[in-house]
Amino acid sequence: MMRGTMILAGYVGAILLPVLGFLWISGESEHGVLFDIGRAAGIAGFAILMMQAVLAGRFKAAEKPFGFDMVIRFHQAMGVLGLLLLLSHPLLLALGGGGWDLLFSLQVPAEIWVGKAALGLLVIQVGVSLFRERLGLGFQKWRVTHDVLSILLLGGVFLHSWAAGDDLEHPFYRVLWVLLLAVAVAAFVYHRLLRPALLARRPWKVTKVEEEAPGVWAVGMRPPGNGSIFRYAPGQFHFLTFRRGRGLPVEEHHFTISSSPTEDGEVTSTIKESGDFTASIGETRPDDEVVVQGPFGRFSSAFHPGDRKILFIAGGIGITPIRSMLRYMADRQEDRDVVLLFGNLTEADIAFRDELESLARGTRPRLTLVHILSDAGEEWSGPRGFVDREVIETHCPDVSERTVYLCGPPPMANMVRKALEALGVSSTGLREEKFSF
Amino acid sequence: MLRSSRRQRLRAVILGIGSLVIAIVVLAGLLRQRESSREPESHQHAVFQTIHLELT
Image: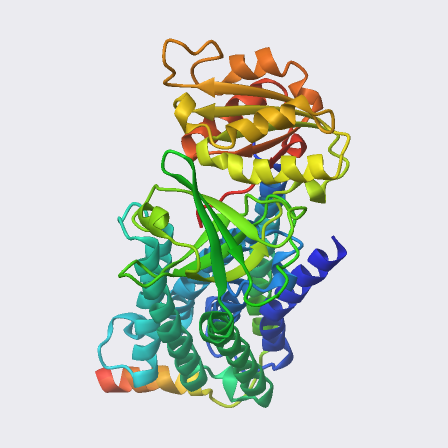
């Protein structure tokens, strides 16, 4: 908590210091108040854009207190704030007495053109990022686009402000601007070039590829030589880049770790064939190389030892972090009272079925396991349909006394959240991590 | 709809920081106006003058 507060304070300081410097370096003001607000907006917008590279850099120190998903969502929100500030910058300058020629004339100095171009790119950058899925842009293509636009943006806004900004003639701003740019460039280069290169020099080896359920594959991995695996908490995830050759795609994707830290020697991710890349996961072979970066995430009962009564709700492949947590609890003989509501289409789709049923026979944790099938055959005698209010009420009547861990596809998660709210579960009683970034 | 406390905290942090940044930006502009006086012409002002001159 303390570290998180300090990180946030440092971030806010990095954004506001340049704006406060604007007061300290008291220049002239020959235009209206809107003009000066516009200048301050440009300064704050610049600082926000530079810090975006740090937020997106997957730095453990910044990720650990909040969780990766929260940092990325914060990065997205700050992108929107930066855009709003930088859009208001020329408008306020014009309204404040700078004149509309600044916006509409073609005969403006080169640095103004650079600023206009950078603003246009920023609109595209934010728009494409917010509406990527609606635009039908795949993650990998979006990522390349985002990187290229980020480089152009960083350069563009720097050149524009350096040449056109009146206040930037002051040594304070000269130093601060170079410092902010250096931080942004260093974060970007480290995140996108240096760290991937370092990780790629020591790829892990795939140790096993087993079909857990139809189209669901457990892929085990081990570091090279006798290297030890990283320390992780059950329920966390990592980024994997499979380098399999044979014409198979080489892309980085994040996957939940389905193994438990109590299972020594290797790390396993259980991956469902669901997209262009994961469709080929079953073609992975032992001894294939995989570049691993992790762990990340806060979705873990290990971070919350006070959660003595737990309701796990999983849909399909959303069982993977929960399997990890249950195995961890069982191996550590944790005395927790756990109900697992596990939704699937058919019996054949149930991953880890034997293991979950074995865990349910144990006493630590005390696990009540309920399978709910939406497309069950006639022979199925268990609950049918979806994990809705009725199912939760029936199989977990004390839901409001439990901490709920929810992991499943978005439509299911939305339905469950509504049901939980109706059943009196509070926001502090719900733990969730969103995996689509 | 029910949101986890993490998401609620994030929302509060985003709204808080967003409001703070905008407030400081506006305040900086207002204070700059009050403090400003008789200083030589700025480069930015010169740029705008150049644009005006070029157009006229």
